[in-house]
Length: 134
Image (tube, rainbow, N blue to C red; front, top):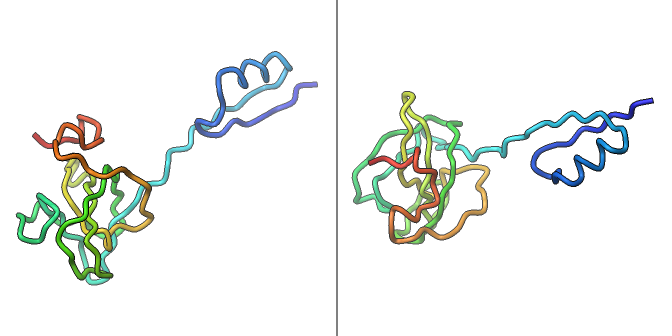
């Protein structure tokens, strides 16, 4: 008799997989991607800025429910979005098949993830280099 176990995500260590195989288990390994945060503005698209301030240039608009990869946060200019906050997120998204990195006010980022505070250097942003706009 072969027992079947399903290992989900990154929770399975190499040791636990080897032990399960030695015990005669047939394993199905399913990789589960973490759920992305997403943009949502009640009145339309979310504005992406070149820096965390409305005085900065607009880098583009993100349609509602577009996935955002959150890199880090910074508290700067207070802004009245969906709610009033000083918090901005540096995020990565894909617009027109082009990776893009910019800042979005926290009130427009839904399903927020825990991320670290932004560093002062772009090279320390935490985003994969493929996402960084040069």
